[in-house]
Length: 584
Image (cartoon, rainbow, N blue to C red; front, side, top):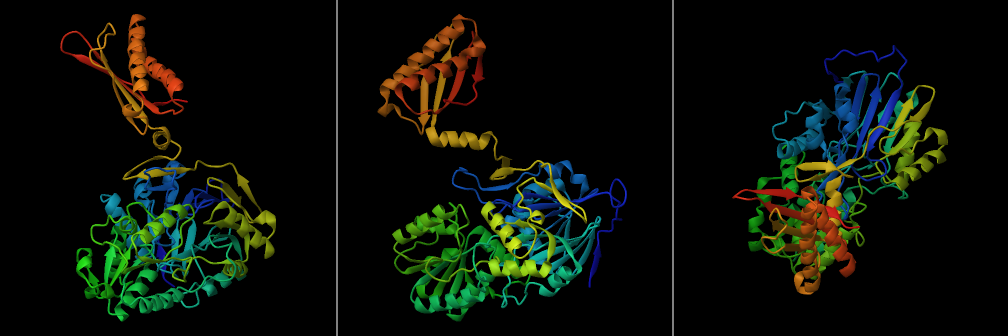
């Protein structure tokens, strides 16, 4: 077995040998699908597992995605010994470009996962020098006071691992995202032998994927999708076939490409992440595809329909993804019509259902045929169903159990499943973000929360989910904006007509009387403020006056933005800007 070490000596925890407890802290990935980030802490040493993002819901206007709040890690970054990554899906690595440069700690991941991480960092944080350690299933790593052994798990992306983490208190098992597929595409099955061995020796804590706990039976093998694709290609020989999938589902993409080759079709890739992930997988040897299989997107419209397969992003209805642009007829390289078949090979992420259904409806409006999960077996999950979750619990036999990776109902259902298999209720913990589970060899208990939450990412900027940015966007979306601009002299006399601009509110053509009343109210407010000698009060007087007018004329409560320019004697002038304020 390969031995690796960080080169750092183990440090005895504060307070003497045996005095510290092991703490487990989820900072994301509980009560939600995505944003996975977990913390193990013993003495002076902290180990982080995963650093993922979550896709926004429809209320998060203009937001690209959501990441965990790193406040607790930032406050303790000198104690962080490394970040372990289970696999290369965005809900496990997507927050790294925003958080890792701030923590500047080592990262441990398998070869493909590191390749995908490097791609993300090159795009968002190109100047950051990654402290990367490539690992493989079966390695043993010395990281601070922890000994870490990654083990193989089968998932919907190659090179996924779980972790057995040996701590001074006991063994911790993090399953990662997994399923027990007996016929995996890459021949790399979940390591039953290691899990059974750990269970025999004794496991203190297990954290496990809960996504499919409400699904009975076993999750079908990924190979079933390959058979369905084969049947689909055979049935629709004369149509151009467009397949939409997650860009990180490389097993699925590999099967589509292999099927296309068998049916003598070329492949076009659409979507930046799709192109980047396939290129990286080919570069690292995880996809064996000849270059002459591919054509450029610019060649699509001139290519015979029966000889082409298009693989695109957009299976979740993302607003600017390839499939959504096609569904609206806005894609510059491809126009869909009656001679096209679209296959959506993914399930909607919880919260994305409306976006996905809207995309499907728009595709039908373009005249093409659409196959989606509700109709045929063109998608299988990468997550374990109930019987597989039972097998995992039975193999590992943990003393304590924490369900992870699921909405709150999934965590509760997983807790109930563990209790059905004999785990005492007091030993199963349904946790929320920021909860602290403290464990010794004899007991476990919840302590006070640590700071936790979420940040929204818009482009390359991010801010607190509960901060002003998202609140302002919601206000603007609900009631619109009225912008008042007034120029006056020191006596309060207007030097130009009051300017009123509105967006998302009643326009002048529809409410001329309202606008005249606003102009009169603004003029009176300026004169009143100046007469009382309260220069600093002009903007608030204008807002109050406009608020009064709107209450008489309208039920809406738009955001009011006031810009006041007081022109002094001579050529100079002073500009006073108000803050934005929503009328209640």
